[in-house]
Image: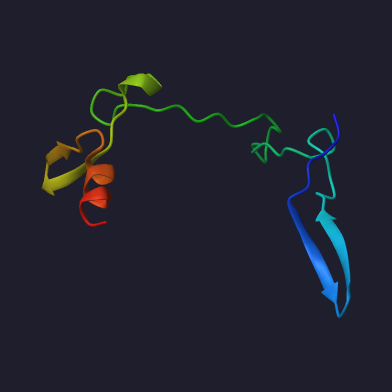
Length: 90
């Protein structure tokens, strides 16, 4: 598959105009992906989402956004709350 340009435009010099396209310098297959490793053992580090109180692992579907109201009291943010506020001010 041919790479798609990141930007297309024209360079205009007096009466002459040239079309220009900027392409990425690397492809997805040439990119290097780094992992975090334990310095002592060389093993890969994994992050688990764990409940702070019960120390049980939590599924991604069960995680919601929220904020702290008082010490020890948290409130969930309703879905679409920020999007609704952004459209109210427009």
